[in-house]
Image (cartoon, rainbow, N blue to C red; front, top):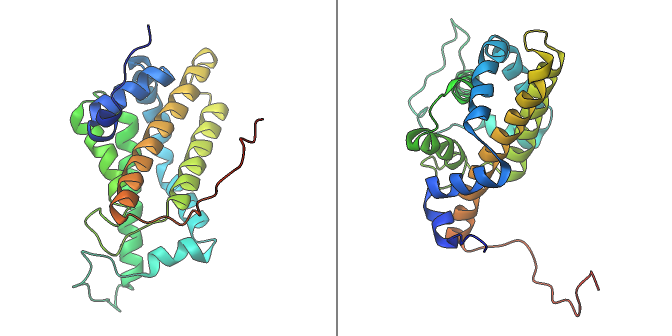
Length: 214
């Protein structure tokens, strides 16, 4: 008999949603252990990883433009000619630090309790228009590509390192993949809620005369 899954709870109960996803993708405590074991390998490389991320983000004007706006929390900032600190440089340095902290937290967290799940959910929420900062509203397309870039980077590190036993590498790669899919789902959850609140869509309604598969 098929297990009943409450659609409404999937939307409003974060723990219920996480448990459902975990069961579907076989995310277990072993995966969390593998992420923890990757922390000493990846954490020292985070400064260079973050720099690669921002080089990628600055490669296109559509993503670079997000960093050229004055964000909430920086309204009172005054540039310092002596130190060379500009609004843009300070904001970018802050975001780089936050990305590094986030990745380190994700790798080192041992207890995926409700507090940590709320943290992962909040990471998604702050990038939407309802996240508490009116100046930040990143299109989901860019979030998706960023997560893909980070996952590919992590996979490359694991594949090429000699600090992880060969027999453990497959488990490590599985754990990385599952983590980024969970985080991606929390992003889509937040963006989905945001779209529903706006009650708008850019997708035209098309009436098909028949299903494409027939």
